[in-house]
Image (cartoon, rainbow, N blue to C red; front, top):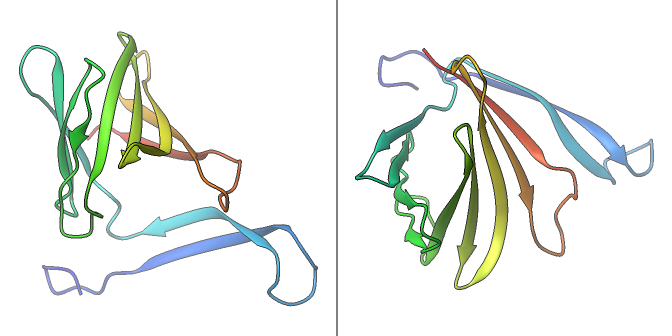
Length: 141
């Protein structure tokens, strides 16, 4: 239930990308996701060279562009999870997330030329992850 008393509804469609065409065994990739409560990402200036990043799940961190890790905090965040940023140009930043020095993912956050759309392309690291990047598209309201 949402805070307004309405039911939360999320529909996810997966497509098998590898495996036996019969049964459940295989690799399934998310192909579409629709929700009446889409994720919200909030970016705010934090000093001269940083962004405060927060979302609707109470995850927060201050992303600096000096190569230093910032602690990510929130009710569902694993301890010692950090993020660091690098500004590529006026429309693109690269974000690296790690835990205890081991990189878990690298993302490119790119703002469209009209400033209305941000595309986040994330590549996950580790032995049991898909090599395919995930793509999130945020539209400015």
